[in-house]
Image (cartoon, rainbow, N blue to C red):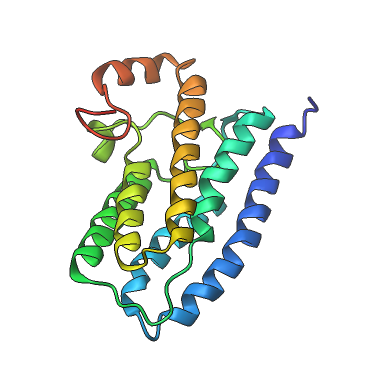
Length: 200
């Protein structure tokens, strides 16, 4: 592994994310005039891009597996598409807003510590992190369930289902790296659950 590998991975992550977000944004922008409720999903995904672009450096996992699960966990949700002419129903909108609020509060707590590939950019224990160790991913799941209620296609279910599997693998890979940090081990002892309090 070369000395420049972390920098190459860092730059590669950002470029790949920008390439992925473009067609997704075009598809959702075209549906927004007929379905303004989709703005919640747009805001959720765009925040991911912004926080990755402005993140700070840290110790990063450089294995192909860590890169694959991080990339697929981020990329797959960008493959869903809204149903043309569909309208966001109130229950769907409520879930998406709750998920967005949890994602935003988690990202604000992380500040510039967020990335695609498992990394240690400092341990966060405040805000939503006082309840579960990966609240941002919990927010994504809530938003995605809300989106599926209004856009229930086989394609969207399949994409989010696969994306959820990769998010679980991503959590496992992140924790494998983070648990090498004594501060994170102490945090994990205090906050037992990774995604859903009382379940997982």
